[in-house]
Amino acid sequence: MRKKIITITGMPGSGKSSTAKLVAPSLGFSHFSSGDFMREIAEQRGVSIDELNTTMEREPMLDYEVDAVVRSKETEHDIVLDSRLAWHWIPDSFKVFLRLDQKMAAQRIFKQIQEEGRTSEKFDTEEEVLTSITGRLTSEQSRYQELYGINYLDESHYDMVIDTSQHELSDVAHAVEVAYRKWIDGSTA
Image (cartoon, rainbow, N blue to C red; front, top):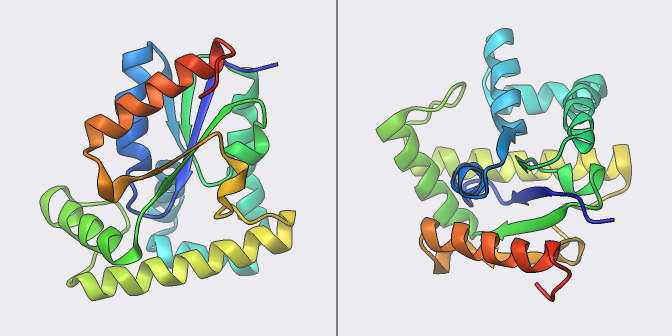
């Protein structure tokens, strides 16, 4: 049974949260971001998101804690989740993967940090952001493979894959919304 839930994952900086924040109100859905939740945990612990990821490598209970919150959303409806593993925990959701080159991701994240700030993430250069992204991807891939035997970067898991370097944010959100409406109606996405 198809759930009225959209799960969005993808590369760091690909626009997961930004896309989810546009799609959710357009559909009249609520929104949850596991990335924001993890940033809150990092802030509570007084560490950066990179330091939290390193800690999670040694303390898998932190991953389980985040995953339990995401899994609890399976009982909800009319919700958009941006989360690395929501597609796995809610397999009957409409699963979206946002692809983006790491260098472009570093540029986007650095620009956002400079303009808006980002909780528990402070960088002085794009190169520092790129190093962080690379380390985070390696950490996550290793942890998720070890904990759950999955590779979230395998695009075959998803109903829709979009390269966000090729599209404006509003176009990505619109494409997700259109594809979701077709999917939920039983049409080909």
